[in-house]
Amino acid sequence: MKPVAYPRGTARSLSRSLRVYHGDHARKAAMDGLYARFLRPGDLAFDIGAHVGDRISSFRRLGAHVVALEPQPGPARALRLIHGRDPKVTLVEAACGESPGSATLRINSANPTVSTLSAAFVEAARGEEGWREQVWDRELSVPCTTLDALIGEYGLPAFVKIDVEGFEAHVLAGLTRAPPALSFEFTTIQRDVAQACLARLAALGPYSFNVALGESQALGFPDAVPAAAMARYIRELPHDANSGDVYALLQG
Image 1 (cartoon, one colour):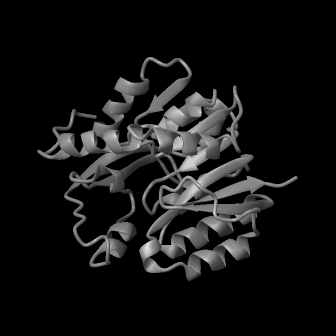
Image 2 (cartoon, rainbow, N blue to C red):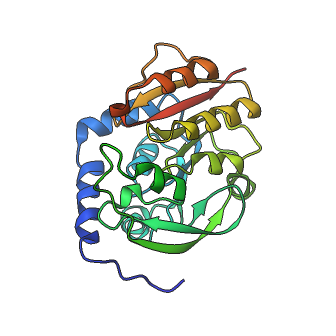
């Protein structure tokens, strides 16, 4: 792949992401407390859609080994600077989907955290409250792998975090083995994607579910609930809830 020159503003947006995602110590502590439910020292974790690596940092603080995927050249460069010398972090500059090969990444230069492989996500955001100012101004062909391929190379992880802006169901379509725990992001502009993810996980194994809205790092239910209850919860969320992460825990 040829080096990519990012448009003006992208360096500033990455700097903003680094401040937001790495600079808040209370947020770090809350994140560590959340992920400690799923990871122990020596465990393997996958970070699919690592962006600037705040989850990598949390997983490492908990003593886990990390395989992290990020297809955007700018954030991938930041990851190499932050985590590239850590022997327990493997950085892969690639996307993840239902089949290996290549995929088209739609880049939001002003807000790279919402760059996406999903054309449906870009269309769903068009004109929606809270999304109207978002512009996906470039496209880039990136290599794509699958969760099954990553498991074949690195082993079955204790936890998989998936945050790929509307492409989550495609990532889970490339998984045929049930990890002990995982999370996937959802948005209220694409509730159907969350429903597809829940259905896929229910087919893989006996999972129960919890949820953290936004970047709260706090689970919303005192105990995990079945897929049907989580599906209903997501359907009934107000639009301005915007996004969150569903956490799936394999039972038995």
